[in-house]
Length: 264
Image 1 (cartoon, rainbow, N blue to C red):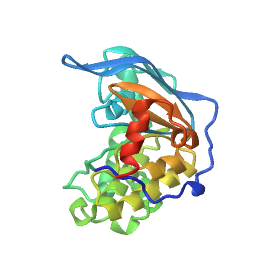
Image 2: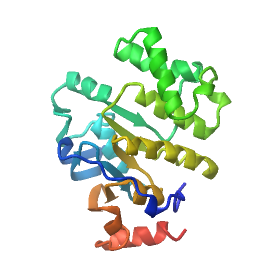
Image 3: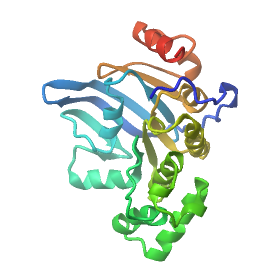
Image 4: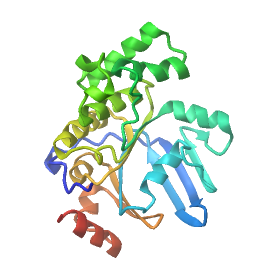
């Protein structure tokens, strides 16, 4: 599902709050699935507090790029550093990075046999060794943060898609991550549910969360992103602040892409 615009007006842009400190570095990252190369020499630097939106056609390598950042996908060439930790330096670093990087997927991936509250408590208890009472306090804090604390005792099947995705965001926040990765978080939602999820993400941006989001929600990109990246054929073809990206695209592939997505 490709959305043309989230309904968020560009003149309500979130103030830019990125710092100078680098928190993510990708250097010459390449990846193959069998004989098919899906990432081709991708290099990217992300500053702490920066919000980056990644867009591009299907199969361009967008989701693979962010999945490599927490090593959900292994890469065969290049280097990735996350908050000073080298992802190629062994399993210990991978576990440490995953503890600091929250991820929200296209599908909600909630455990259907656990309540909303239990879904949110699980990772802090299992990964960080948080006690049950403290984990519950943390979970309720973030369920309130995404505006659904009243659903804590319900099961995922009792919630709408938009509510389930907000639970998924709360679950990731319960690990108090330094970075949030979003992989097309609204593409599985009905159009009327998209805004409630985007509003939650805008709130995170306003609080200075470092965010990388793969999405076709161009209104969100205009309003929230510090930079918008366009990927095609496994490469970052163009990147620019949104006011330049949308008004003065330099590459013909980006012009064609914007012409298609903004006029559907």
